[in-house]
Length: 307
Image (cartoon, rainbow, N blue to C red; front, side, top):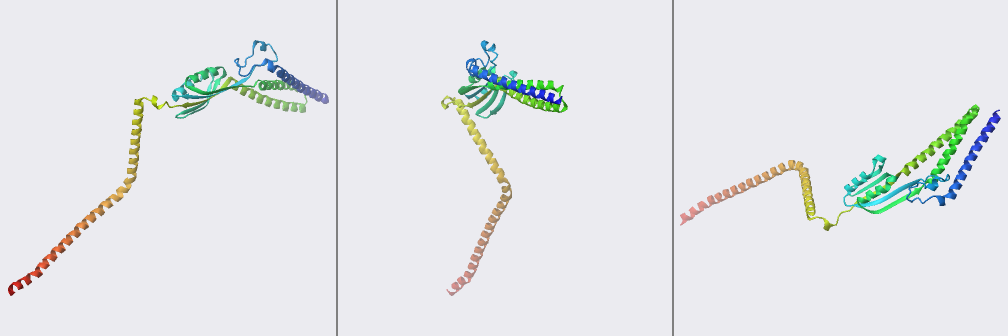
């Protein structure tokens, strides 16, 4: 009995894998034969939608296209341009900024815009400045997307067959079935994650914007604006000078508190010593003159008596 169950299980698994392989091979063959005649270029205007003739063809599937755009924008007013770009992002449709970097003269944005609103968004951006470079690309991932869908369908079929075998499987067979089903669930989750990522990239296009503010020519600047600019520059220079002067005075003040009184005291002492020394010399001179006069007086008297 166990041998028969094992035989039935093996035959069913082999049959499932054989059918899945045949289905995948036939699908790829049909795709390769029909691709040149039935699919339009990825950059066409229908956005990947099928025509009426293609909708009736079972071998034709929906086109899956990822759009990207890259633009360089030059503007005279950076703030106004940024406001226009932020206003063009429709948050009600789930659009958002992936990256945002703003400096004094430049700004860089990475925006995720709904693919159906891509052209309208680029038109609004172009109106806010001068577009120098605009690149728009489209990547057709229809083959990869459909291949994942086929693999998911095949794994789901195998999972259902294994579930049917559980009711008449032995304990050991039940363990092997559960193990295989666990592997299938893991693969299904991984593949479904890939499809979800593709869906997000298809539904929302990535737009990279580089914005540069360009200064107007000197001749076009009004005289009042230039005069105001010069006055502001001179005022800023004066303020900077006063700030540095205050810093220097603040740095010197502690030294002045200590050394200025000492210097004043030394100066007073020097002046005092000079005055005292001058008085001493004058006193000595007067004393010498008086002595000379005293010495000369008797001799004069003697001279008169001899006469």
